Length: 440
Image (cartoon, rainbow, N blue to C red; front, side, top):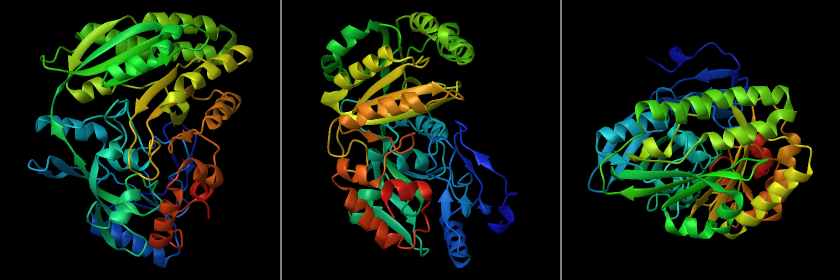
């Protein structure tokens, strides 16, 4: 079937959070790199800009276009597993959920991942999606090679030895360099993770943050505003067999409390903000300590059915506790009523030009609000604190930074823009959002 025959009726598309509506002139669903080449060349001849949109889990307009929208729904599946090199090559539109399940069937796993798995692999890596880890970095840091269709219709195969200058920047490419059609990732034999979730006071977790980070392969915590309560999670490899949560207890924690009742609490809080502090105390005490063990993706990820908007900044790790305390003080002296917890994670430094952890050990502070709740006042106040610490905003989450600011916090910013100038001088893959964050 040709690309043309797969074009869907043009209709507006909204992202998961409802913050962006995309209205393309043309939409295609290619099934191969050759069909992507054809679509890009046709768009160029028609004077259309081109963007690729996955599952819409970015909160920003990074994938917005009024030209050609490429949907990667048919660019899916594992192309090749190399057990000698311990890599897997996967088509770019493959959802992380399908990839994780397929790898597990082969006895393989990614070393680390974020806390949801709805995104496509290219969407996740292009925006720098990450989990938490003392030694293991973002999903993009696992990339060993990628296939990229550029503005002139060339298919570039990039790695540390083939087009290395493109590879150095394209692993977190923001969709600004071309259309990623395949990605090769480092994998390892599937292993068991033991998760320990435990309530902890704000003062204790901030006082012991460095030790908790050092002692655990993967450490994160959530602080509930208007309370002194945190939930901590420690994931470490285990030699023991999987011991997942029981069906009933797992449903209570992951569905009833974390999604069902949390949805109700947020709906009430949006209508009557004055009750949010009391609801926060109840929510923060609802989840009790538990320990379980399973294969990695079942421990790293969990369902997120309550929709929200989010801002996240990467800071030098040594600044994390001070910044969090400043956020707490800001909330306490303001009239703000915050129903979502603040999430804190970590990552080692990496060598990707526009990775939020590029060249420095990092901590991530993420703030959320229930979808439909006015977020500007809260996010602006938090952003002021984050930027004072040299923070780097997550590329797929709400922020107001521009190219001038970003060039100051990314030492290799000019390296990225130089490759962009060479691969896409006419900005076929540009849009208004990229103009703001990367410059003209």
